Length: 200
Image 1 (cartoon, helix red, strand yellow):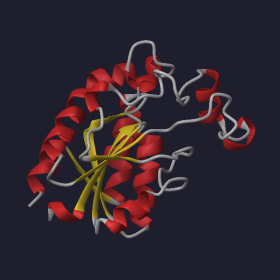
Image 2 (cartoon, helix red, strand yellow; image 1 turned 135 degrees about the vertical axis):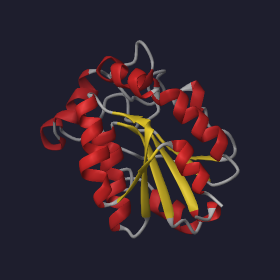
Image 3 (tube, one colour; image 1 turned 120 degrees about the horizontal axis):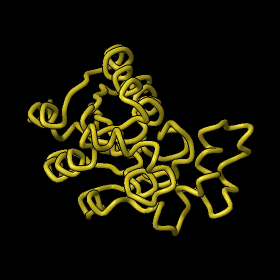
Image 4 (cartoon, rainbow, N blue to C red; image 1 turned 45 degrees about the horizontal axis):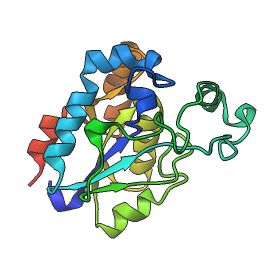
């Protein structure tokens, strides 16, 4: 697999998910610890930089969530973020964690407001102008935004991968479902080390 045709997408590695005091941290902290998500993702990003395209995709809303839509329309997941006051622009919680702090070698993709990172961003454009054919996904939540974005990528014609040790869900059961039941229908499930070894 050519590294020049490959990208890794890091979804929502933000303080509100990943750090004590973050608005949604309590829900995922157990699985972050079980998966060693942060350290694995940090290792993956550091080793991938300069080899393949690395993109960080935060989800960010205005202070008053005027761009989040009506919670009754978009559903409970947006309502939960709003209730927790999570992922607001200009706040500590909305910032990308220090361990994955972007460098000039990374692309930060702006505009994510929905579960599928392609829907409200220029992610597809960025992948296509860089001649990307293979896309690996990691981040939060495994069975929500990671799965949703990977499913969309598959439908757009990309070869997709799940970096299972760089993800976290709310429970081990949900993580296992994506790894064993869903993702094999659309792509490969690998550790980040296994994936990086595939790059030429």
